[in-house]
Each structure stands twice: as structure tokens, then as C-alpha cells.
Length: 470
Image 1 (cartoon, one colour):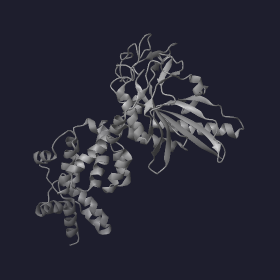
Image 2 (tube, rainbow, N blue to C red; image 1 turned 135 degrees about the vertical axis):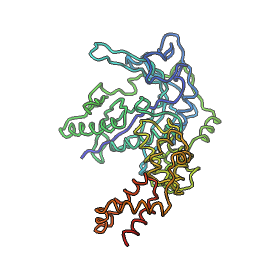
Image 3 (cartoon, rainbow, N blue to C red; image 1 turned 120 degrees about the vertical axis):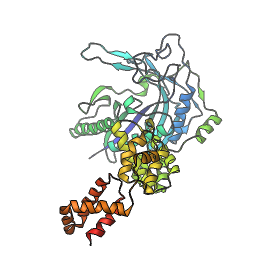
Image 4 (cartoon, one colour; image 1 turned 180 degrees about the vertical axis):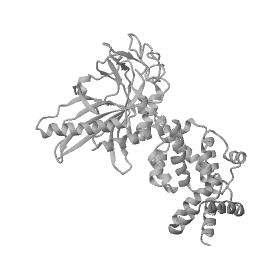
């Protein structure tokens, strides 16, 4: 029986306004080709790079969040390779003096995944392949944009491990403001390294699968490679050390080239860029300004009384976690009730409209006010759900209730008249209740419908049971 050994190399686009070594905008997603370019990022003769201070600070912050040892001095190297989307015919990266080393990430179940290194490098361009054409085009908007590459130790053992780790990385990157970490925009990409071995034996030959742009593709590539390498080893053949691509349509990997080693890249210190020192006062500022990380936020939410699943669901979305904290400050009811609405009704409404929470006009105080109206009996839950879209659009819940005459009916005489009418109109349901007491819920629903959702449900149930038991 073979055991998989898996490592990840994760590339995150840093959240800077400009590229790593020039003043061009770092934004490359959804733009016309080649609008954010200059002599520096195009690698034209005579142009000189200047390191982006903000990129260095963001990379250091991210490395600190991963509990890395931070180097007091780093430097940039030229990594030589010859691809059409690399305009210099080398990439400015970091080799033996990265920003951070020897970190770790602790997954939700307590597993510790080692982080070998975090280093800065510039992104390449993007190849465009027109259909049926005999040529390819190159878009250099992304060339020179700042990336941080995070390399794990070979501590993962399954596709699920890799997916869990990527969830943690994305949440941490967003929490510290280092990256949007959006795979759909190319701001989080991963390479996976997969090998197989028998327990107790040395690790097998490593195969790298490049440029995976979604968590689903990472998992699919790992699962395919495990099956492919298992077949090879069971047939008595040797796994070739190589770099492979991933065909999303076919859900399979394919060979690209034999795997390069570090010597093949002919690393050399970039002569145009000086060594970068991190002053102690800057290091201290980055440490003291570190925000609460998602795992700690989830643990804090659990202490408030949230169920663990709800706590993690909220904590691992920075915008939702911030919203929850602000809404909790305005709501003195059960925190779990607030969490249920936020992850249930609110999330459902946003999903149906295809927008993110931060893109709406929903205020934490607005959701808190809506829940208070339910708690104090002013409106029913169905009424609150009906008004939620208006509250998400920025309307005041109390004003909506007042203007629409939506206050919950709790007058026994008024409800008694409705209950008597429903009982008289539904003799078949009344007969069913005599056989099955749970059928009273159908009568309750009829009363709620007659009251247009305004009747107080527990009072209606009491009135129904009182009359039916007579």
C-alpha cells in the first residue's frame, strides 16, 4: 500500500497599488491587454528596478502570521528561465535569503503543517491562445506584479489536507490585508508536489503539477496523480521526475517537461537591486499591528456561545466576522441567533443576488434592530424574513414595520376570532387533529396565512389547543 506525500507552493498576489519594481498599476484582472506596462516591467534595455516598500511589508506581515522566522536582511535574485510571458528571460525572485522561513499553520483538527519559506517574486505575463489560430498572444499587464510564494514542507497526505490548508492560507492572507487571495481572479494559484512511498521507506520521486487556479482543481490534480503514480509503481515501473499541467476539462494531468532543479535556474544576486534590511522598529510595528487571525477569531466566537461550525464559517470570512462583531455590539440577544441569521437568511439572500456582504447597504445595526423586533414580539419571524431584502437595501426595520402596519398581532380577542373562523372552515383538519395531534400545525399555518403572517404563533397555538380540547 502506497502513502501519498504532498507539498504545496502557493502564490498570492499582494494587495499593492503598484508593481514590485516599477510604478505601473498592479491591477491586471479584467483590463485591456498591455495597458499597465512600462520599460521596467517589459525588461527593456537600460531600465532599472526599484523595490516596492509596501510589498516588502505585506510579505513580512504574512510571513509573521505564519509564525516564520523573519530575516533581518533579504535580497533579490535573478531566476533564469525562457518563457514567452517572461519579458526579461529571467524572473526577479528570492533564493537563499527569503523574507521568512521555518513557519507553520495549524489546521482546525490540530494538524501542524510546516512552512519551509515565504519569499517575494514578480509575476509573469499571461499567454492568450486565440481559437484556431497558429499563434499565441502575450498580455504583460500582470508582468512584474508582486507575489509572495509560500512553500510548505511535505506534510500533507491527501487532497482534503490540501484543501483545508488552502482555506487557512486564504483566510490568513485576507485577515492581515496581504492579499485578496481570490482564485477566480488569479490572485491565489498553487503548484502541488506529489510522490508515493511505502510506510517506513524513503519518499518517492516527486512530480509537480503547475498553475492550479481553484481549490477544486488542486484536489482533483492530487487525486489523479495518486492514482496515476500508483498504477506506475504497481506495474514495477519508475515515476519520472517531471513538471505536469492539469486539464480541467478532462480532470487529468499531462506532461510538460522534465523537472528543473535549482541549478537549472542559474540563480544570481540581482546586481541592480541592493540588499533589503528590515529595521527593528519596522519589525516591531508589524508585530504589534497584527490583527486577530481567523483561528483565534473562531475560538473567541465559540466562547461567546456559537457552535463551532458557525464560528468557523463566520470567522474565516473577514468581512462577515467584522460585521458579526459590530452587530453583536448592537444586539443583546443570543449570539447564536445572530449567527444563524447571518449565515442563513442573509447569506441566502446575498447568494441569490450574487453580491458580497460588503457590497450591500446592510448595516450591522440594521440587522440587530430587525432581530430585536422579533425578540420583543413586535414582529413574527416570517414578517422579518419578508422585510429582510429591504433591510439589506439599507431600510430601517422599525420604519418598515410602522409604514407597512406589520406589527405582530397579540390581542387574544382578535386572534380568537381568526382561530374560530379557521376551525369552522376546516372540519377535515379538525378531524385529523383528533387522530394525530401534530396535525394542529396545519391549522396553525392557516391562521398565520389568514393574518398575513402577523399573528403571534405561540399564542395562536395555545388558542387552537384550548378550543380543540373543549
